[in-house]
Amino acid sequence: MKQRQKTLLRRLSKLTVFSTLFLIFAGALVKSHEVGLSVPDWPTTYGEQMFSFPVSKMVGGIFYEHGHRLTATLVGFFMLIQAFWLGISDEQLWLKKLGYIALTAVILQGLLGGITVLLFLPPVVSILHGILAQTFFILTIIIAYALSKERTNRPEIEVFTKPIHKSALIMGGMVYIQLILGALMRHTASGLAIPDFPTMGGLWLPNFSDTMVYNINALLFDLDQDMVSKSQVIIHFSHRIGAVLVTAAILYFFYRFRSVNKNKGVQQALWLLTGIVLIQFTLGAITVLTVRAPYIASFHVVTGAALLGVCTLLIMRSAPKKLTDWNRATNS
Image (cartoon, rainbow, N blue to C red; front, side, top):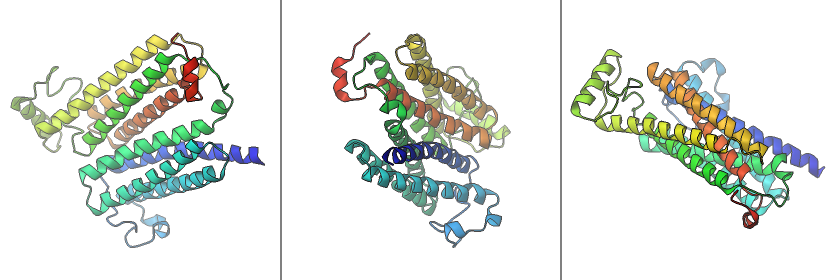
């Protein structure tokens, strides 16, 4: 019976991970379609209880915004069950505490989502809402990996290659910062602050002069888009530079560690990470070239989350099962 319960808890943890990834996509669709206030009240939906709102009325922007709320509630429900289940299980204390932390995070995330609507989408709150979503996603992956058969079946004492783990931490940190820059760009209306690619305002090396900003606004005028300021151009440029640095770093680490065969899981994660970052870079370019087509932009967001998720998985797979195992690790 105990083994059966552990199997169910393991499946629930995986369901929570993939549900959270879908939730990030649903949230991205809301922003990409600019329909964050299509449902102007919270926690009700046009005065009705969320789950009693008629499906027939879920049209236009309401479909995306109300659908996002329903998905968020479902993820919160999964996390509530998971945290409670972990609390009464015989899992390690740190894992139980992590479950409670993740539950707190998803509750706070829901509150931030509500505040975002009630305060008419203030950029600061919206950015925090986006960052916390990515952070919560990391927590769900750590919990799922800690419960996984892969980790359970790992030997108590293993030999590790420290450089891979350190590199995984660097990659994870870079991707996390890049996602923060992405959230800043999206919620300051800077997504098209540089509307051309691969040039930037017609330049290969931007100088951020008034002339450059004028040329960008001329391009935006032709595209029937809102004008932008120099600060928005700088925010967008920072995200582009971040994309180049993250892509280059991952490709470098892949080249350096691709022939390390001691850990099959690490190799799989490295290959997956490389594939996703190339897709992500391509989606970023297409997002600009299609003038932020909603579904392209949303896939760009969720692929970024997937990249962060694989980085987290690589960190977990390349780390020792116990901290005390670092004493036995090698630098080979």
